Image 1 (cartoon, rainbow, N blue to C red):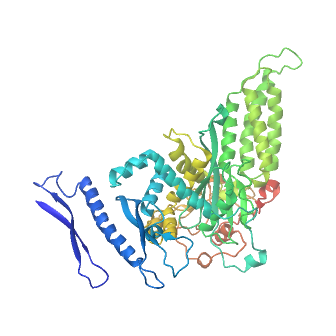
Image 2 (cartoon, rainbow, N blue to C red; image 1 turned 180 degrees about the horizontal axis):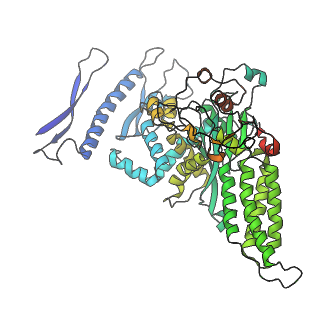
Image 3 (spheres, rainbow, N blue to C red; image 1 turned 135 degrees about the vertical axis):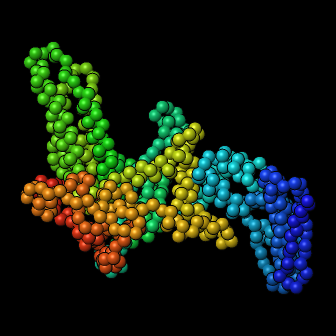
Length: 592
């Protein structure tokens, strides 16, 4: 069987259609290997069709530009050069004539090339898009092999070309970024009060990771830090971002643009969660007037867990050479027991936001460990160093420690566990895990911009903006919404998780004697501690149904959004029962 594929070209005018045979192939008996088109045949067919199509397009474009638009005279021909254009379906070598400008029209140059003006770039947008997209997902070498395997590129594609093209796209995105500012708050309270009711708060988590450095001169220079984060609105798809802090000159602008892409309003509350490090602690300041800046509970409990494990290995100190300084075994055992108990109490003081009691406990730990400190360097010395570091960590972030238990029971974010997954997704999978290459700060930063745009499904929109004729379709918005996970899935409150189409009911409280409940709570009901939830119904989520008028109408500007919505569902507003021993300075959050 012989099959011939023809192309019919119909001009816009009344000229007859032109039919051309472009490809012919044969088939024998039917079998799995002979069914349909082979990959090589499909490549040759696409290349042949494109060549015929491009020839006609070039002829029509040159015919339209052959005469002067002012006087109608034909342009005089000077010479012809070959323009090389790289496409998805082969390398095109187009005959590009150069013509003299008409004397009736003044021009800055004597000659011009109409084809070069119509095709200023030598690589088509679709090829650049696929190269950048695959480079953001897998290594440069794998991207080159994959594209050469499935597309009739017509030339060898090297990893270096993929890297240069991806960096060129990323640099274009960088050039579009606005100028860095100290503060992005450009409204006053009176203006924010007149704005419509905002959506529920946006939760933003920031964390860091490390990648191999190509400019290693010593063992300490083997790594450099990359900052990654994720912004999660109450409804809709979350977006991630990343940058190399030592290279990026516009980190605050980058974070602001990420929030603005999520639809952040000037009167909308934003919760920033960080690990409290010096490098990113002050980054989210002055981005939103309604923002609250909190220390991540995960990093606090992780440090306490390490110290607790170190305390388990404490042993009685050896006999001292000075009898006056020697501790009795009973005293040493009592001190070791107090150290372990203080570490447990320290965790619960911080869980309830009692920073004053937590710092007092840390001071007591330092005193006990100094007594247990032997002359030689053993385990108590390491634990003492860790406690000193934790003391400095708490004092530097004292104003960012809220009442985590209260926020947890109200269904608000307390941890950046979702950001840990973003670090793994943005940095580790592409630059660290199973990736043996080393990076320069510039190369890593530019690749991060491409990778985050690919993960957020925004790269196709960028090419649509640059090239209006770009026809590659990004995933449908409805499909993205259906595929997106619930934005606040990292909340551990069980009453916020319910099956689709139903309202999630919380577990019931336990009855306790009157007066033993939390200050301000209902008498005789125990809220259940870190795992319990208040009675009532959950706030509106993509998988939770709520018919309350307040949920449909939105929230008052400037108010605590989560607290207001939870209050009409029966949950206590955050801050309603601050008092007594728990009303410490650490309960107040920094607001900028």
